[in-house]
Image (cartoon, rainbow, N blue to C red; front, side, top):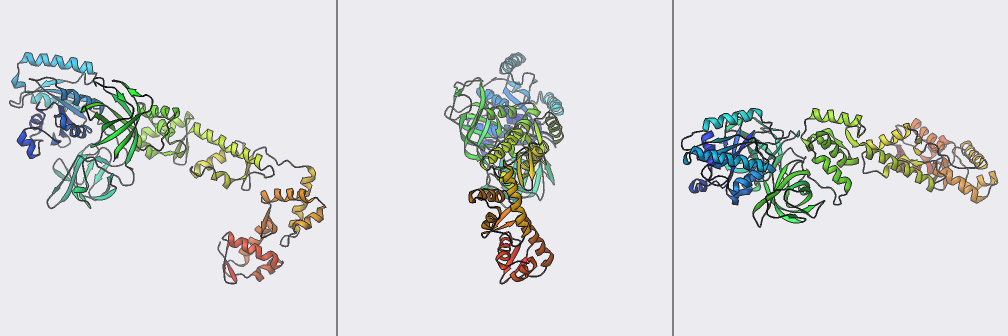
Length: 623
């Protein structure tokens, strides 16, 4: 896990880190010369735990946020001779907004004050933390970097905390690491560093640099200044990369498992405004937006209100000036760039916003996703994905909940009839039921529009929903059949009790027409022959022929009508006689015992269906 400092400038954060670790976290020449931390510093508490030292000056808040993003245990540093200062408050607010739940208050420069001053400051800090409703139970320890008095007490507190703290990183089943440092070492090339927030990395792995989408190879890994072959979630690591120059990487970029993440310029988040800001936050405000190790500008569109007053919260769309790469529940900070103050923060709900219009249903889904309850989160994402479906691995990617817990929750949701599983995808049950009704309505409408057709072709029905997974469509059709709401005959789907409305006379005519076509299977009658045979009006016969054609009992091929059984039998003859040898029109005609007039249209039909392939004067069977 990661320990991090926070506090006002010149309150002794770097001196504290040096006392704890033996490392001077101020690595830049100008920092050592000026005695002021301007960028992130790094040290190692032990072989498993890193310490991030953040700058205290308000000018370097962007660096502070980039470091605080991964902190599990906060050391809030307050100089005993100065007390609570503006950056003490701002750093504390940022830590709270980032969701850091564990902390220790360290009163530095103990050697400059007496015990009574320590007691008075301790009481003031306790009152302040109670008022802020944050780190109220955090222990307070005093320390001197000059005499090291209090150092062992602090170490003991840190060790006790470390044993109890649950790391904040979420195992999403993939590798994910925001970059906070990039540099080169002669003879090695490009080095990047950061805290691994999910997954693991091994020497030789290929990773994707985002948002530029460049594939890089891991040449080497260093952890706590030791070369290793693997680094895992929660650890700080430096990776030696092949295939990229230092100039193409910057703080704020992300290294991740390839082909998982898409950089985004538009995301949905849950935003809370701090209580002590001097302004309300208005819709469409432009802010500095900090997420991970990245800082950019964003225009914020509130979804439910025109403004958020101090301590109010709500859903918002963030339109970003530069692309970011993030996960659901990643925390962010927003700052007013004209006043240069932190005004609020929150967490990401939907990293990739697929639509612009948001309705009440969407807001209800966002509330579930924003919930602290794991079941609500999972149901929310399934409802958000709606009829696109979502797989188990994507639920883990989105929520960071352990796979076993997700499976248990999914089983409960299925039993509660809130979701349905089809193959590997999960769908909201309510939307699935609504979709079944849509299928029924389309079939009903089809019956109205084509009253003499026995039903809609399954292929045509599926075409109405070609944006949906084929397995989902198949499941709906099968369910409607088993529920006796529809019936399937051949490739036609109709309502279960639907029948073409025909008079007994019309039924008798249709039967006679079919009999005549089957009697003359490869030399079928034409329209006029049937008209003379039945002695029927042309208008009425056209209606009967329409019924036979629409229901695919008859097929019209080059002005000749064939019964579907004629076509099936002709295909059988082709397969039985010409599986491995060519066929001529003459040979086919002879086998059918018919004339060229009827044999040739049938061959053309098979050509068009891809059953036969013509080469010169012969054809070959393709199937």
